Length: 318
Ligand code: AHR
Image (cartoon, rainbow, N blue to C red; front, top):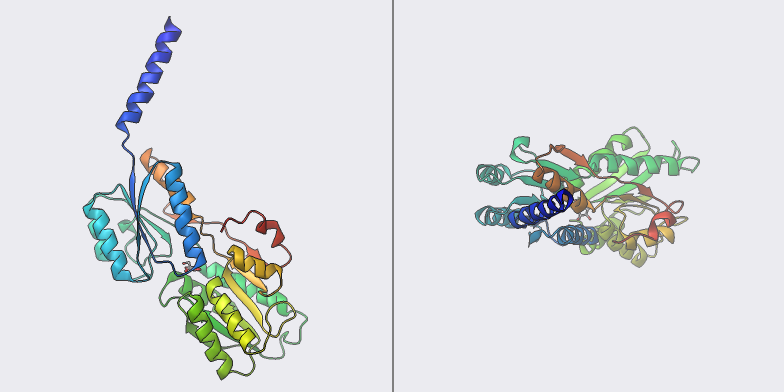
């Protein structure tokens, strides 16, 4: 009898808590769809929300900060439960984030950073872009060991930068430069913005190839620009990668680029992990349960070369 009563009351408690818990609505302001990496980040966010029955509203900022600000304002007026956004640039968010705070809507910043009062957002999830830049330079240090360049001949380097003032661009540039300046024979010939797109990567690389006869290393701050650079380099009659004319360092680690690491066309790919939606859902769960969350959350990232790329290619979903 007691047992039956307990079961009945447990079931009815569960049912009434289900009836009380309205499904959450999350407003997500995405940067745009400039890269394969970005597409992966968006689809992971969708999958995670679907798994948990969350209504996810997504606004594509089309690489414009004003579109992102408009989207955040619209989420505030719709009274969503959480706002998640991936900021195109670091500056200029204070006013809109203050508005979200006044409306009592928690904001989770994703992927890139914002440079404003940290009390204006609840948590941040993303990459250590400076460490990614250092990882690229550390790999190059190792790769040059024992080669003709080692401490003697000049290493001529060109950089394809991402979007101007984006954290991914600033951090990767800073991290690489920190180590590069400790090598007097590393010469950075040029460093130009190519907006994280294939078309721009090709265009800037074509310009570099016309301007500089001797390029030893290309540091391309994402895979999409790397694909454009490869096209330009091939059109100029040169080769890249293992045993090629030009050493190619890329960032992101998307499946199609890792295939090129495997075949030796790209020497190294510094991973930027787009599976941030999973971390964000965990944060939302904790906040919903009234538990504390860490303010800063770094995602895990690795470095891929021909030596270890096979270990990841089989399961790579993006
Ligand atoms: O902010 C992350 C960067 O943005 C990725 O490296 C790039 O592919 C994307 O567009």
